[in-house]
Length: 76
Image 1 (spheres, rainbow, N blue to C red):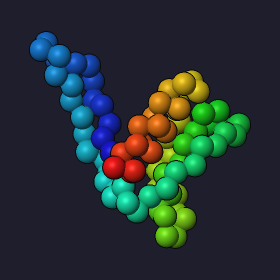
Image 2 (image 1 turned 120 degrees about the vertical axis):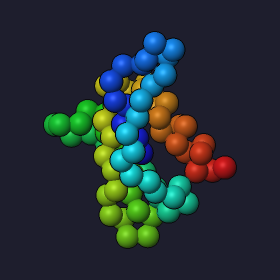
Image 3 (image 1 turned 60 degrees about the horizontal axis):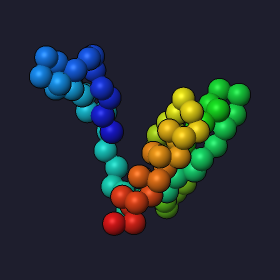
Image 4 (image 1 turned 30 degrees about the vertical axis):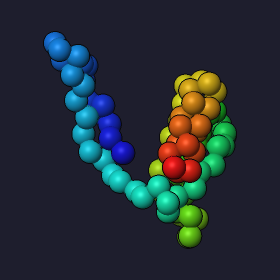
């Protein structure tokens, strides 16, 4: 997991800071919504069910794209 820091540089270079990493074979994910997260996605430990990360998208189509890409990566 990385977080983008600042704007792209003069040559279009983006800067990211490292946050955390998880093996794709050890995770599962859930779509959810509540009062705070209208388009939420949880990454869970497949064995323990512990929540590892919570993401929030601005719109449903963004969440769906992220979900689809993540699912495809796990299946590979």
